[in-house]
Length: 435
Ligand SMILES: NC(=O)C1=CN([C@@H]2O[C@H](COP(=O)(O)OP(=O)(O)OC[C@H]3O[C@@H](n4cnc5c(N)ncnc54)[C@H](OP(=O)(O)O)[C@@H]3O)[C@@H](O)[C@H]2O)C=CC1
Ligand SMILES: N[C@@H](CC=O)C(=O)O
Image 1 (cartoon, rainbow, N blue to C red):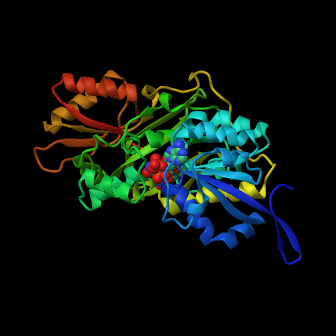
Image 2: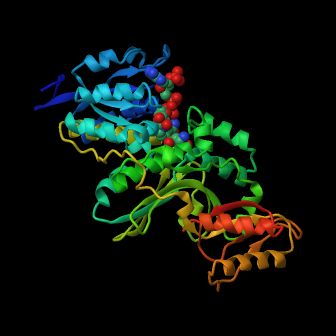
Image 3: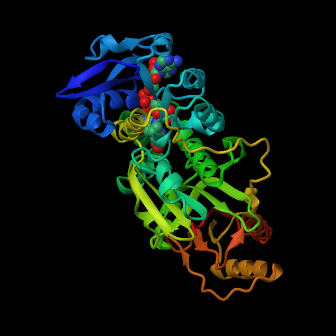
């Protein structure tokens, strides 16, 4: 048996050693949480454990773990005692090269790095299976929330038709601070960075790329084929006006950045990230601050929601360490969930086909004229309308918001916007309603 032998009473157990790559927010959380709960973690893993190396480009002279810090991956790769790796560096390179090298040597890897999984997941999972070890990524989606294993295992008996939710803690935190505490966008973002929620380049959060990477991982896992971020329609929160948030409230809902994937009738899937109007009837509308929530729709479960802290040092470290424990406990057993690589994106439906009711905000106008234009559009499309239309206005004579009385595809909504514009009514903003 590889590794140091530790004696506890009459038991002889192998000592499992692991390395942490990246000693930033998440990596330092992994090390601190490990030593805080060491006895408990070892009990769960069924053996003694220790952190042998911490890789980082910076020095940490004041850290109690300074003796474990190394500046190169080589000692980690060459040390047969190290059987598990926690990758918390972020980015595709050099993380990809390092993770690949670890897996090639049969060292299981647990990562919080969604960019890596979203870009290289299929390849790394195949390599792990070939080398009889594991590539785990529970922390890459939803921070502390267990979602990868439940999708892969607990819900495996379901035909899952879609997943939707809040997958970015930073933007949900920013929206909450702006709305609840009337904080400026820049101040809310700065606070999210200070709390360790944001990505190194926070535009990845604000522009929806981070949520996009996460919905790519979920889509790949649920539907079995690698979905790449470049193929996913992605819109962030930069254009959300506080007026829209207030108007949405008057219409009975909240504005949230939603990442979703749904299977179309013909079997193609439609992943997307965009701000959406979420009715107060939907639990997701009540998910605030750094919390994430993920709703899974399946034939047996109807729907099941997963909720928890979506970012932060210890919540994320919790998920990484859970994976490390699994890697140690089940060494040499391949548990990793896998999906096929994909060479083309023909299994993806375009955003134009996405169907839902729509929130529209039009510039100040005569409401009767607006109604006429709307109903002219429905008549031109031969869509019957029997629902009542409710509208919201912050003050008389101001912009008007409403929810379309029926579901429309994004393409139909483009036509509606064009017809209204031609008719002298300017559509200032629009967003889908979360079904
Ligand atoms: N923060 C969070 O709440 C969450 C983060 N994640 C993901 O976890 C990963 C890490 O995030 P986080 O801890 O916040 O990021 P940090 O930037 O805080 O930590 C990354 C650490 O890795 C170091 N590093 C970067 N490149 C190298 C390299 N080539 N060799 C050695 N060390 C390197 C960085 O050093 P330096 O600072 O000098 O660049 C830094 O210390 C990312 O993929 C992120 O998306 C996932 C869930 C939640
Ligand atoms: N920047 C991310 C961190 C966790 O994945 C977020 O805010 O959700």
